[in-house]
Image 1 (cartoon, rainbow, N blue to C red):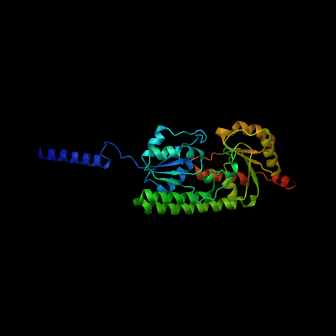
Image 2: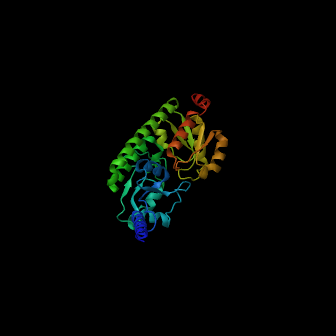
Image 3: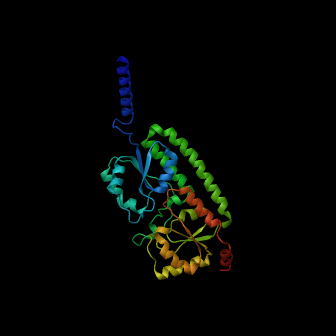
Length: 302
């Protein structure tokens, strides 16, 4: 009997210990949350945080940033987050930042694009395009390194107990980013000065990094351009010998088909908001590097 009592007591002790270890709630303890604005940020931050926190995005892949409105779940996650790491300058952030601060006055908020040299004039807002910062800072590997450094600083502040872990991960990732940047630089060196076409001006920083020209033929906010603006853009694309047309399938397909009947460029779908940030930039670089060269020879005559 004593033996049975001992075994029973031991089982109870093990169950109790497991219950305490899993947060005393009869289930696994909830992992701590850090919230970011977009999926490319989640990719970058997860390279630094590893398995120490759960990173959640406000804007999921495939969602339209122009029409985004935070759900109850998003606001709940924000309220339970260690911090909110915004990308900076993207439209929906400006629209909801006051709401977030009012609902969560103690929530640490960080601008992860701080220190990035901005590009102005690619996007319009109230007729003042020359003063509006292009928000697509993450489309540049060089910018991504700045963003990652800001992320590291944020995590060191909100979770200092894992500071050394985050620092090691950042150092490894920073080396990876340098390697990616060097590879793209070498890949695109023969194409310096070349032009490519986009519907939405999402690759401005990429173009700046590698000495390319971005020709925008659509509206800056996925809106249709006037006939006169379209004609001017098409003429510019022809004169510059642009033979690649990047567009976002979910938003631009109908307009691109109509415009490209005039240009006959090679169409390449891109997703600037994808989680697979590294693969996306390498795909864009490969498309430019493999673009036909005949058009550039023709454009030299202009």
